[in-house]
Length: 282
Ligand code: AMP
Ligand code: ZN
Ligand code: FE
Ligand code: FE
Image 1 (cartoon, helix red, strand yellow):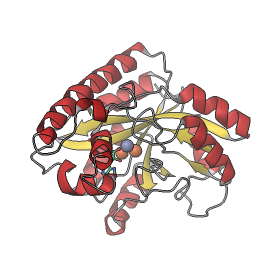
Image 2 (image 1 turned 180 degrees about the horizontal axis):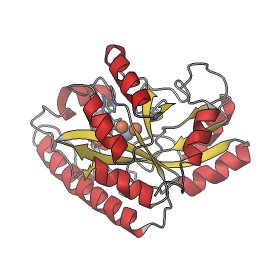
Image 3 (image 1 turned 90 degrees about the vertical axis):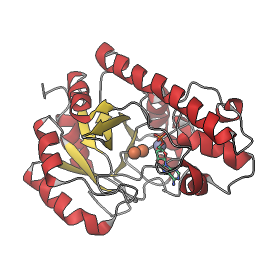
Image 4 (image 1 turned 45 degrees about the vertical axis):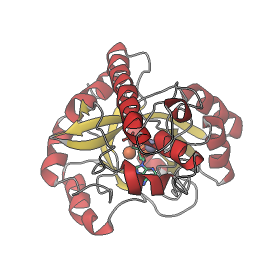
């Protein structure tokens, strides 16, 4: 983890393949322009942006780490799991991700049906850019913003897309330990995303980190712009106790969120440790 805003890696970014607003190539170019040594593309539940990102990173002279952010849940709580360096041909993982994306489509359609009772938006407005992307609440927010109901995504989330809203519906998520197993079986390294995100009711507890570490978790994203700082000290201590690697990332979503590319970074030595965890852990 580093807060020095020079060099380093941004290990958590989203492109147009999920709910970011820029292409993988644009992220690579921006990463090079702000002096990052490298970055990971971690679109929700898809690896569709990897090839473009890898080629653009090479052209821009920076390093690229292929990643994914998997929709998981653990003991009833939503958990996002970052998987780095997975083999994208792993059938088991692909099948599991396919299930998540199908469920996301059904869930988004039903949420749009509910929202459309009170706001004049249609399914076509939500998948205007095509339905190949991993669809989620951000795309519903975009349709509402385009129709003039809200000034930006954040306002739409705050007003009508949050989990307490009558329009809200959950989506299928893989059990977190099972997702960790899938990532490892596909030769990847699993890192728990934003364990102290302010939108959660409570931070991830020591007991849970311990359980996930036993399931094969390799790291935890201790530095993230949406963390509630006062929640962090026990998580930092637990991560150290369980030998977890600490990463830092921006969770960049282009114009979809205020998070700035590279505003949180991971030191190159840490990226090396992550990489050495690839393919060697069974
Ligand atoms: P979903 O997975 O469809 O439930 O949507 C969750 C996604 O919405 C995550 O990628 C979040 O980064 C994004 N998100 C959550 N809250 C907000 C917000 N207030 N403004 C913009 N994006 C948000
Ligand atoms: Zn997202
Ligand atoms: Fe996330
Ligand atoms: Fe994310």
